[in-house]
Image 1 (spheres, rainbow, N blue to C red):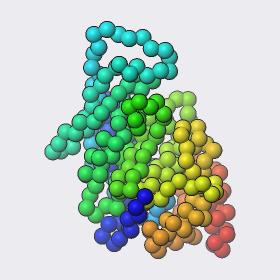
Image 2 (cartoon, helix red, strand yellow; image 1 turned 90 degrees about the vertical axis):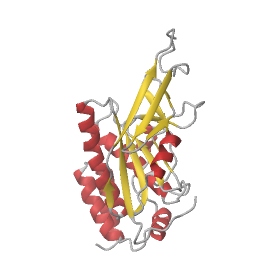
Image 3 (cartoon, helix red, strand yellow; image 1 turned 30 degrees about the horizontal axis):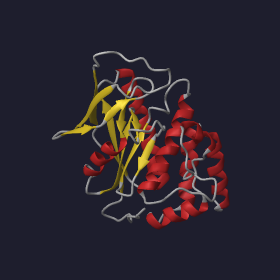
Image 4 (cartoon, rainbow, N blue to C red; image 1 turned 135 degrees about the vertical axis):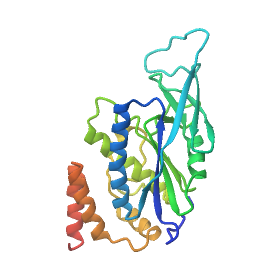
Length: 265
């Protein structure tokens, strides 16, 4: 991936909420509460200013079939049709959409990424879209994906798989934070790590996140410091240890406290 340097005129990370029009009041409140926590994490993790952009509305409408088709439990009905769009103040963008294995709408990630890239503010280093909707990568694949980050300074995070029952809120938030950090690192132009235990290890399902870690290995931390110049390791570790304690990420808090001690602080 190409690495874009963080500059004084382009150093803000933006989060763009993509909110379904059919979201209930309870789910909307939960989504925005999680978004607040993700905003705190991304700001401290990368030591950069973070701005929450105005929400965009997503709509997904099921096209009624003439005859219902039965499918096995856990399988996606490829015949089931949906139409979806993303609406801002000026335009309505058409988004490819299909049904997932639960009969819920599943939005095409690259269509969303194209819109996010187009709406990236001039002073932003990158923009990450965050949605409670499910997403998919290829029309002929049923592989689960939770996010995507590109070298075009645009990315996407889906919370659909993280906060589904019976997953508890603390574990769900931790999984979401790991994936968010992973995708933002891709937006910085960094690839998967194959050398150490690292947040940049590749994974293919939410369960994989439990084996992964939130922290960066020495190699990827050094790469991040090339992109984000002037990053203070000790200050970052201290702030992350405090934040992980507040979020009840116990293993992560212990790791950052130990790393802070290794820095002589």
